[in-house]
Image (cartoon, rainbow, N blue to C red; front, side, top):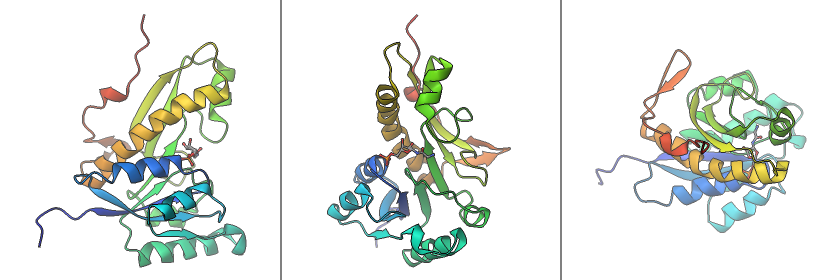
Length: 218
Ligand code: GAR
């Protein structure tokens, strides 16, 4: 028997492209990474990320939400797969379905989400368009524990990027996405190691994450 601590079994939940899922899969290849991506689950059978995960020989399941009579029924099906696969942690990675309070509570402190904005600013959709429209000079992304309110919950990690004069939603989104791919594996590592604790809504124990901060040159 090995004395190595057992890796946490992680499910990545996706709805589309799956680039954040891919960044987690890549990171989890490192022998010292404390988690393995044991399952990819999509609510859309045509999600491009499913093909990538299958090519990596990761167990991949599509549960088409449209085939279920309601949200709770769909979530029961998801929960059955998560339990069957002995999942310890869930990573929402571009999973575009709202979750019921019941499902969120079942995974309290064990479900992470990545959002393409510096929460609590710009919850919801079209974050890059809205940041540009507001003229903010700094934008970014957030990994947080999932709470029952949408795009809320204790923040694990954030990365900031500059907003440049020539930016379009696409160029700004690409700059943010590159940082998403760095902070999500970082945040999952901290969560899987058991390094984090939540006190009064704040995540503590994440250590120094200065490496993710962008300071404008003045
Ligand atoms: C990512 O930018 C992620 O932050 C965002 O969807 C994109 C998915 O891309 N998530 C949300 O907006 C959730 N509120 P990906 O499929 O390539 O990871």
